[in-house]
Length: 603
Image (cartoon, rainbow, N blue to C red):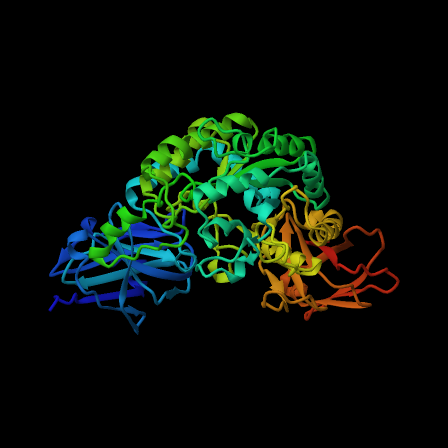
């Protein structure tokens, strides 16, 4: 029988620290909101260690232990005690980092306020690290890396150039995502079978066509000869982004199928060599966007490449993981027809060089949006980040580069963090206009203009960016229902831009809002943003004659002026202990709602 690990983990708020009885914290919450406590730096007696740390941001956290591989094969059981309340559950082995194997208590602990805490660990085998990571990281399958590379990353991330780039990004707020490639020509079906009806398990979205049908590399290459877009695509899409009120565009330079929409010197699996199209689609769209005053970014699938990335190192990683009970996810890996080269050959010969090509191709490139990090190592992920930094430190990198080494985070596709899930890192939500990201001819599940605006104002109220996707067809045409909704959305954005761009979170995010996805707005719902001494209350329904905003009652601060954005009419209003009451009599209602600007301060 395997020896069972005995482990007691206690977390409690230390009032004694304030009295000077206990020592100062040994660990401080990092810039990525994680707390990492090194066991070797603390006093250990009889397999028991007590360490203190300072929490700057309260919320829900998942507790992890990092062990050396020699101890990881043992059966692990544990209990967590938080302020006298016992939370019993099993440790679950999660993944490797350079410090060792990470095991996770899946039941999170709630730390209600900032301050100094104490953690006590007692176990038969002393862990190398104790880590507290925000729950949103764990629920979004975000792998937090080791201490080994953190210092190098944070120096680059906090550089003046990178922080200036992040200020641009925070001001941009609203961007267009474009999923487009060879799969767009297939329109969500293969040889008469829809992706939903494929027997292969996996995502039922159009851009996963090659994976969903296990199409051989040779057959998929042959199909690429049908991809021949219209040359008007770049100007049309750039204009649509501009009309929607967006400030930047991000397109799939290379998705998981490995196909590059630019003329690459590192691979002939690209638009110039594998299709009849004569030109460079990425450069053409970049030029069109710059002509419209839009900034530009590219999506790049670095971990997955079904054409030239072998099996994404699956076999090697699984061989390492299996003896220790660490899971290896096969999803997204080419296990049906992998290329014969090694995964390291793919990285060295294609992925790293293509990132450098894109940066050199577009001097004003603003953002690189990585995806499909899969099974890459910490060193490989950091190399992508560092290479970009060395070539152009003003390029923003998303967190999917791997191991939380990006400049900002996301909570997953079509997911906006809840109020308790916001972390120190700036966030972005990427979302679809229907279900699929790439073009699927039979997907008519279009979100309404109101639903898209609901997503947007929710994100704005929480202080993030919205990257809203389109999936053009094989010719580069955007489906008409999508384009119409975007243009209508843009009319609202244009009128109410002051409440969006340059704003931050207010003390409250919203009022009376239905949190369910996909619902339409009703009167009385408000979302808030702030700028200087102004608060913006955003509604997405026509204003009735009498409007009440309860969150702007007298206790929120004295309202000294009130303005209806996009309208010169004088509003009649009064502020009471219960609400800000506004009379809209005689003002023509807008079907997409209204925004009021309330100035707070002394008269």
